[in-house]
Amino acid sequence: MVFEGLAEKLQNALGKLKGKGKLSEKDVENAMREVRLALLEADVNFKVVKQFINTVKERAIGHEVMESLTPGQQVIKIVNEELTILMGEKESKLEFANTPPTVIMMCGLQGAGKTTTSGKLGALLKKKGKRPLLVACDIYRPAAIKQLQVVGEKVEIPVFSIGDKQSPVNIAKASIEHGKKNGNDVIIIDTAGRLHIDEDLMEELENIKNEVKPNEILLVVDAMTGQDAVTVSESFNEKLGITGVVLTKLDGDARGGAALSIRAVTNKPIKFAATGEKFDQLETFHPDRMASRILG
Ligand code: GDP
Image 1 (cartoon, helix red, strand yellow):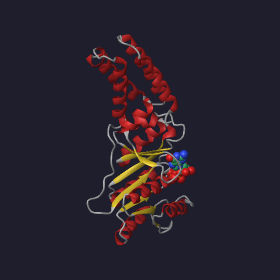
Image 2: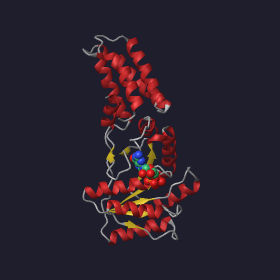
Image 3: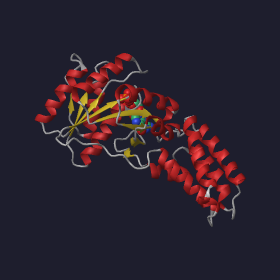
């Protein structure tokens, strides 16, 4: 189950409204107080929580609910709809280049799951008939190139590497030429990560971006890090202009804060969700399905 604590508390708070024939403003207020606490405990950004509760209350205490035959169900429906909107409303698809190859730049902090996700994304696209190429642009961590090569072998996708003596910008540039020659229609560039955001990392990513003009800049963030994931997303977005987020480790005991805040805070969509270490454990992120899973 995803976001277990949050799901349980929300279902509990809203469950109390379910059986009631008529709701008073006080009933709604009480339920919303519990919902608010549950969201804060799940590490959802406090501004996002405030806005969310206000919107739900406004809708619930208006005509929409009070005159409804099943007011409790109506409030639950509103919460479901607003949670969905909070996470982006609709699924957000990858942008492909009109003239291939499509270039996807993967970025994020070390350990977020960038390399694994690059392989997973490649596998997902290959299944859809694309011919991806993985590109090893992390020249700093000694084992990084090898790691991507191992990933490439597992998912049976070629890996472009020219070692660690060239600059990442040159590697990225060369990979596009290589991809064009070899009929690769999607180039997935695995960039270097750091333990923390630093100027050098951002500058390097900007340089790669300016050189290869990616169709997508996907930021990979670890859902278990909650508000830190949101802060990281804000920083990368400000400096780099990301096009979307991949949330990883949703199979762990993430509380939900990242999933529920990132879209609202950065205004960039969560495009994919990773739910395990295996290479088929990446799926398109569906805000409506996620909301329904949380509300049970
Ligand atoms: P990078 O440093 O950002 O490239 O991160 P890696 O791809 O090396 O991943 C770091 C660790 O997280 C590895 O042990 C991965 O197997 C693991 N990992 C990545 N994605 C997921 C996920 O969705 N769920 C779980 N449980 N582990 C993941």
